[in-house]
Image (cartoon, rainbow, N blue to C red; front, side, top):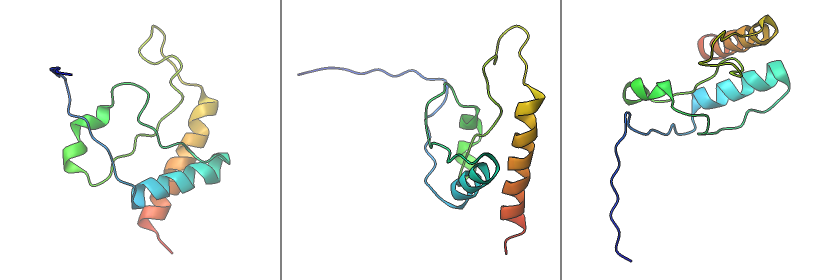
Length: 98
């Protein structure tokens, strides 16, 4: 079949290859939560598109976004506490390797 395809986008797509950062983030999430994170490209438009061309690896990790971009957007403190610990573990693994 003949077809034509036209794509208009606001940002270029990107995909991070699995490497040190991806592994460190995964291990840190699993250590703190007991859950192995899913590597996924779902979830909407990524702000990572703005820096993807200057990074070897790019991982997005943040709080639960049930109210994101809505009136009264909020995050529960109970969601921030483990996230802060995950960030700490990531930094320890990257900056203080054993």
